[in-house]
Image (cartoon, rainbow over all chains, first blue to last red; front, side, top):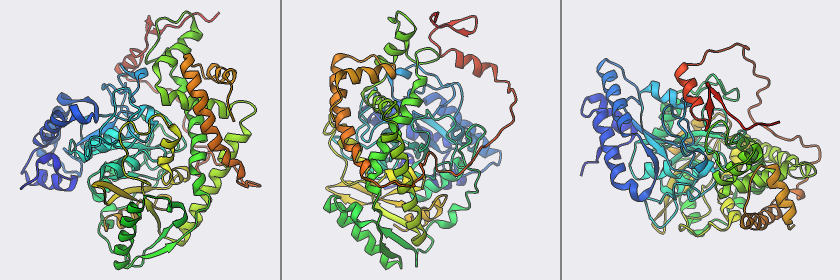
Length: 472
Length: 96
């Protein structure tokens, strides 16, 4: 049976568009049709841009008629609702930005527009990207398309669910401590967190400025590499974005991995669900057969990734979310009697539970008398985690772990236990704190749920992730 | 370590958050749990270790200090996000 158009990968859809077999309008209609059918249940999207998408698709077809080509020309995608899209509602899944219409495009959206990609809508997420389950949304939880009683993972919940459910050809997410890789693993798709600074953050609603990274969620490793090649590179307004060449990723796809060295931090992953470890070890055998050298490595400080992350992140959040003051944009409480109450009441009513919790932790950690014990100590341990990863990556080409210690959990199972939720990112936060590129790729199934493998590379070396990943 | 109610209130005041009594109670317990977990950081020997605030290695990136004219439509759209406008300006409560 032939695939519906919305099930195609970027590579497949592009070939059909180039042959004139299909148009972007047809491809876009197929995605919009799928969204209409399944989104009311899955709740992967907060906003659907039907008219705008069809208009952009027509334009892409026109550009192609005029002789233009391009890997993303006419390809429909979905963007996480933390990314500003001009003239389109951008809520960050929070009541505090319920009616916010973005006045300009994020740099990565501008780049995709220039490439001719078609924006279908804005993806649901954990509010302000705070969460690992997709349940912390003011617009309701997203369901895992593989098993609707389970979470899709977060915080890029809708972005991963939409790709897994074929509502789009690819999507954009953001990853601060695992927010692309976790849902990619839970939903069975590919999720790439590029090197910190690889793409411009301009136009992302800031969460943790020192680790926020936008990246693609896709159906194949090759597709993820195609999207990265378009969104990479600096823009005008983010001075932490790196002006480094991206190279030709297409040469990495299916390139031999003979004599590649991969390090496995056995101690760190020892408490992973044993069925997941079995799938992981089977994958290692398969890689060995392809000539990969598997080496045990030690990362004694990686276990401090979560406590470091949950000091640094809330600290940066308490500062970044100070801009939501009920004055310049967003929700403003009409009952406020004076200026101070405009702040306190708008914020108290506008922010959800987890956003308030993190603002409280961060405010505490940065307050006089606690700064040295918490924030400064966390920054120093961050140095140790980073140095240790950098030094191990001198001995090996990449490091590999299961993406998650467990399969996607049941909806509602962990909502009352924020600490347990934080521990979901145990294998993911070290690469974020060190700014290293990392990818999650489906490696098999446990209890009929997808499980992913994480590959971490050297800074700016996304190439090795694509090379190893395309051979999995 | 248990955070007392007054301490929670003080943090909420600093953070400009109006919290209900239930929220104060709930966050008090949860923050105590989270901070106890985070306390394990104190066991790491960081003697002589520099703190990491960013990982790019970039230093002082400069740009020209020049006025850029904003697109009129973008400017108006940005202003329209404010809850109260008067004569093209964002209106705030009196501060004196």
